Length: 276
Image (spheres, rainbow, N blue to C red):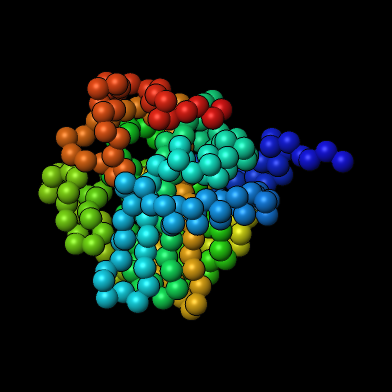
């Protein structure tokens, strides 16, 4: 018996309604696209990353937090398991369909690990204002390798990917280190009036993950109980993505890219290989 092709696996997981949900809400949940072997491959990559952090690695929790929130970026060229997961699973074909794009390029990977007891919340934010790209055809795949409860999962504001861009701030001290203070509107206080917002979120089992536009507002809580929350986000770009150099250090940063790609250029560069 032959294994289903990637296209067959994607077709079995999503319908036109799923694609419409993604386009309308800026987020959707994907159930059981990934095989146990693919999840194990990603899990191995996370453990390698924890043991051998890259130059962009950081601890994003406070010293008095009983847990630990580890983050690292752009390790696919150094961690074979990450490279294989990105290039040898159906996720790029899924991205192509959800974005309604002819092409798909890798943007970057992002490892996020909250150890048991971590209280650190990930505050409400949009991702794209931290980046060096313009365009609406983009996708972030938030892929846990552990079961995630509804309380610890990502939450999203449906439709917020349609704008406006909101002020990006540093998570630890709430400083405007990217766009100058006052140049973008601040986020509303979502937690003070959650009932006023169309909040979406899902419990996740290994094999499931969520896909969202990089402008969709999202947040998450800490980790409940004795559980770890090991996640890899894989971010991809579609047809309309263009280089948007910033006069500040983006997150992640791509040193020297401004010399290779002028403002407004497609993201055609070895750092961003074409997957589809």
